Image: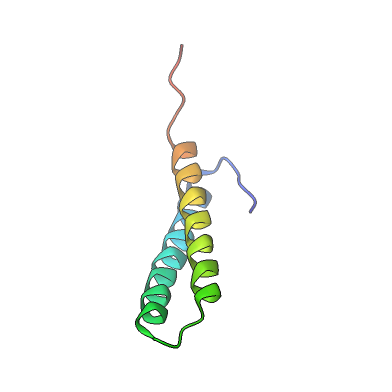
Length: 69
């Protein structure tokens, strides 16, 4: 992922990551409801969801200005 300092670009990236995070949440829920679901696939989706959460947190923190010492 390429990060830059432009707040508009960061906001757009955040929106995309949040949408993918929500989509994964729905996909995981549907897979978990399916008795024949592949446990490995669910674990991979959950891992991707956690990675997205970390990316979102990192981008959000980059939007917060540093406080002077």
